[in-house]
Length: 191
Length: 173
Image 1 (tube, rainbow over the protein chains, first blue to last red):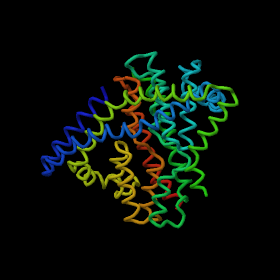
Image 2: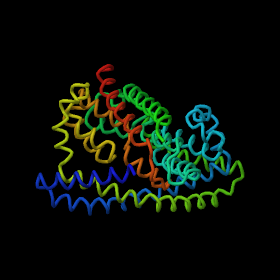
Image 3: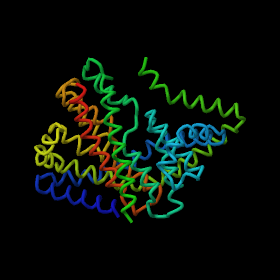
Image 4: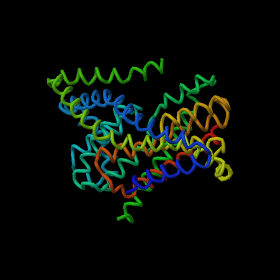
């Protein structure tokens, strides 16, 4: 429902504003370009997606994911009490978290999507508290070294492109803490 | 050296997993291809929401709505400590990762990488994610329509991230 509303508002605002500013034709072209871009993006990430699902399968069959998730599991269990006893979900969630921390976005996404799919099997069509928490954690940035941003700063001639790291860690920590707290609070009142 | 290390992290990880798989006597090749087959299914599942969302984002970008909104709420941002110049970044950050990088890079170039605005833009980029894109992909893959409080909770994290980025730069530099 939320996505339906957001989408309708976005399209409506674009058309109204486009007409008001005389950008109507550009909006019409934007719709066609955007649809094509959706397909292009999906196709361009398909290769990496398949590669990492393959690597993940090896991790799973060799028991590596299990070892990795053990390290993160105590913290994760407290975040996802409803899925604490579901080994498959905990494996995917903890591997997703560690990939996010290392900034391996391309690795984190398939892991997170697998966790989301497994979680949704228990409550088809409706986001459970666990799924909401997973989404909130993935919409916050956990990346320890933001390499893309640092390279942009270096290109612009920064004296020390990595001097923003402490500020990034501070801001990320505040952001994720607020997100997790909001999710936990909303879980109590939202039906 | 640091850059190379992080650039090479993905291939190193692939090799490490492959070696571990061989040590554990897993049928490596079958596992890889079976996993890739699952990946194809995931890609097919996320394509429809991706098309819908990018269509709306491109229309919004073309309409000039983002600029108009920036002029309207700029003074409000300054009042809470967020540099008004970053309004464009605040608005595109949750909906488009590439657009946010473009807007952020432009801010960093224009105001200088070591200026208040340039640093704030960089920290904002590094401490937040493409929220709506992530939400669309995750709920699309899970085939979930009733998202309950996921969107408001994620937006709370975003707003906190933008505020904290602005304050952290003022505090640390």
